[in-house]
Length: 187
Image (cartoon, rainbow, N blue to C red; front, side, top):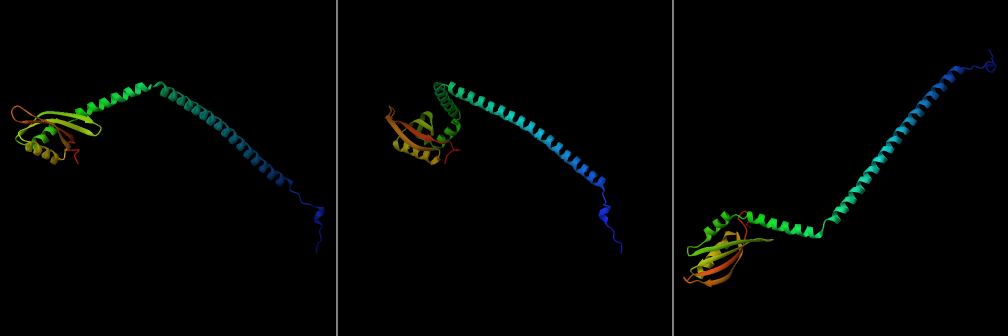
């Protein structure tokens, strides 16, 4: 058996260790350089975003100031005048959409032989159309029949004889008011 003391002749491979340390060092430097580059890029992006947020907040503040100035510059008189004019315009539109053909078609179907219509005047309110008719009839029963026929159409309701006068020729002139819903809107 051979006995050798290896401690007297140690084995050293310094080149391999140096090479491995150099590779680890290069990798560490590369990672550090990449991290620094990312930090700088994100920092500049953050600065841009903060500037954009500041511009947006300034624009919002300007818009709020302008809105408040506009709200204070509009006078209440002008708003009331505008509301009145709008109401008048809506009333004119409602009057223009009143179908005389449909109305007189319904009246023609319900009018008894001994009754005639002298005048018709529609008016408009928030609940719909109110029709004032001047009706001339020979007998009170004829007027009652006419009112009954109007109610049966479904387009007239709340029919009330208002004022009745005797005429020189023996007929009766009666003012009749009724609420009117055209057939397309009738219940």
